[in-house]
Image 1 (tube, rainbow, N blue to C red):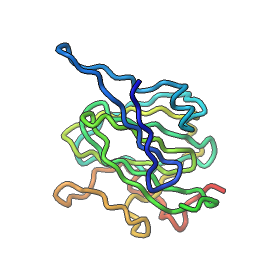
Image 2: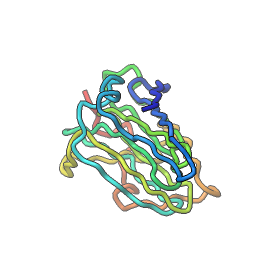
Image 3: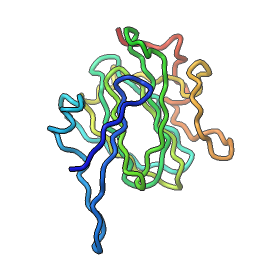
Image 4: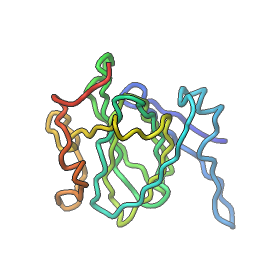
Length: 184
């Protein structure tokens, strides 16, 4: 398996680049191999896979759980998104920092977001399908939403034609960073 784990500007968040093998039939790539990911510090294990499809202009997030925190390995199966992680670990030197990257079916990159981060994404293509593995089960009683547009986070969302994103009621009513529950 040809794979490259790259550190990002936010410690613990890794950009994972996969190599596709192509021939006249098409392409093949391994998206996950436990031993290699564990060696890069990703895991400890995944317990659930999630898959979401969204239209262009949809913004999902910024979601996190204050207990049963989930590490997420995110990849795009179809289309293109702007994927964002926000460090909510108060003991971290990168507390409050954000990272945004473009993930697409074309670039085949994945993003590892460790537990203790809020996560969200904005759909750039007409349609996108996002698949992600998580390290703990979804627990709605512990779910929180950070306000996607909080100016203190300085997230430069690449909004299409400057249009307001399509949001769920929950995401529209997210909590500003200053008042949000955070991790110790």
